Image (cartoon, rainbow, N blue to C red):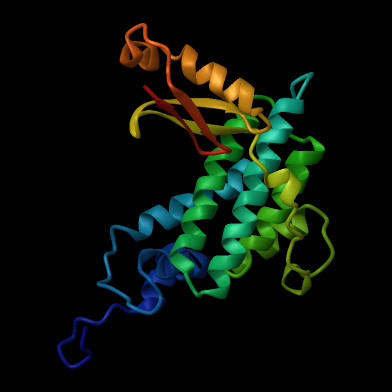
Length: 232
């Protein structure tokens, strides 16, 4: 863009149309900060919709299920996984992936709210952490929501949320099943699965049985948390 050619985008006009937070978040989300890119007025709508969803999802009441244990665990895992990635990306000035991660987390929060995971301890923690993560991206909306929830003024003087590694840990992992080094199947198993259990499940796989064709394997090799390789 060039001012002499008259093709410069007036940010004040965009702020009047969408608000400062939308323009700010779009500039952070649209391109890698160090590289930049062409302005596309159509893409700013995505940032505008995201902030609108945050505003409505966080303020509108939902339903709370009788048993929210599984929903709470799922929500806390996603929140703390996002907190770790967002913290790392802020330090590297990777603002586009920060906003992307926040959008992804909001989708998860919306789904959990719809399933009955609203207004629990885990939900309230998620909202608190989300607003703190979002504050550098959308400072005005974050401050307004923070105040509406009765939090101490100001969100911009609050410490960065503490990452809970235990909460972020996965309950399940994916194991690759190989026959003679070639991938033949994949299975999802508990993260604390034993070697004996992993081998048993691998040999019970229909895809593996088909490859073995009734023959007993010569060796079964287990690489913890990664794969089982059956040597025929």
